Image (cartoon, rainbow, N blue to C red):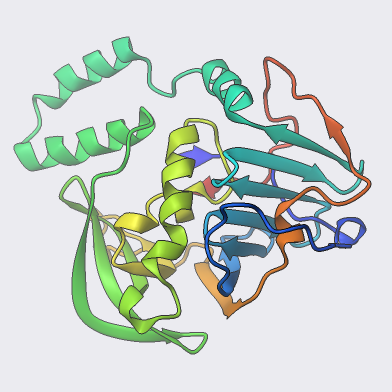
Length: 279
């Protein structure tokens, strides 16, 4: 399944951040996370995560997206036009209503009838895939293997990730217990990203389910059980290239000074989708 969005990084014209006043009722200040991520052949992405707020930038772009679960909004910031669009609850609902279903109900009924001919195990896996196409949450289960790795100095455990009972991915996951990543860092953000689907949001296939993960995934490799090799190692890499914990300025999560707010189209469609994210 491929989701695309018009999100990339904020270029040099957008990097003059200034501190904003503290938000009343905000959670206690603590060190945020800066994560550099490689998704296939797309430009490097940088994620700035501060509890329930996330900023995403892509190398070589003049735009950014800010997902703010605390304020219940998504900001699209464009550096080349010095403008931004704010999508609050009402705008998000308009976006969701304008997106046609990936799998119409009538087509799903026909496919379900065809699946009845399959053996039980294959039928379960196929239905899990159809649920994903229909916008449902994936039914992942995690099997820890004896293998361990170190990615950019971070220890991780290799897991077999199953979808609908069938092998789907192999991921090297840094456990929450090690302390660099903490489940609570991602909980509020994951809930909010799930609530705004099917509106596509950059980062949704990384952050939307982390509250149910055994840790933070550092690498990801697809598994195709019907192939003799199983693993698909010749695909472009999906991996994190660097992680740092430390204070992040509040201005990272607000529109830059001097930028003009634009009103989103009432029947929106992404005008400039960035490179796709795959799950």
